[in-house]
Picture 1 (tube, rainbow, N blue to C red):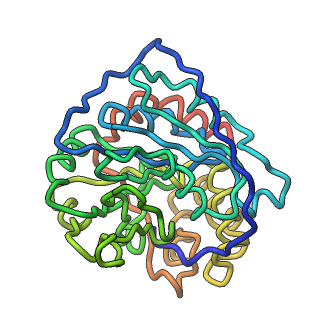
Picture 2: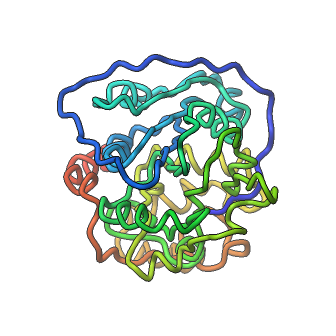
Picture 3: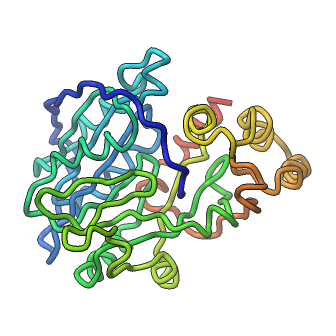
Length: 322
């Protein structure tokens, strides 16, 4: 979702890491499209659905470029790298076509991370598709977007953001936000900002979304969404919401959100959940006065295959963290 501008910190050194590759269970490539797309990820303690993310994009990617490591907020707490399996998942992901590259380091903020992976993108790439470590797409939706891409400079998506598990999604503020994810690439391009995701046109100096933009409404009308598993797992939500509260937008965030909203909602029965949503006009970690309503609704669709085939294990992981 759109987020307020970040604080900038001191630059930290980065290191490129050679990846160890497994050929077992390798995923076929279906590139050879009219456009070449590099998928870019920034990750830190993002193991939850990361394997599914990589599986969902690998067949369509010209490259997958990853920046791993903590931003300044976490560096100041003593972190130097992910403490879960994030780096291992990327390093050992089956890559028979040598698409995946990763740079690791400590970063001032996310602007620095996206520009770190940008330096790994080849000059013949046409677009960069930014993907967070909890965003998954359906194969048929990626194919549809690829067919549309030559006519556009940028693309936005509507998010189906899962909350407290895999059966409810956020509405209101979250559902009505446009997630800018695809932008045209060119030699010498760089990210201007990560919040909002911005690469500028070399001719006009304006963001690509001010040119030929394929909007989230247009894609949603075709049933194309981003499946966003960002408010699912307790550890994930605790880390994410404390970072935004303490480092990004304290004045707009609910104090003690994890303890007051997320955890009691996940553990509660239907009456308790309704009471929480009534008190906070929803369940998003931003203050109701800032974001407006953001309640939950049942998810009635189908998860992407990469998630669906892991659903039992992911549910067990969630329950094990409660």
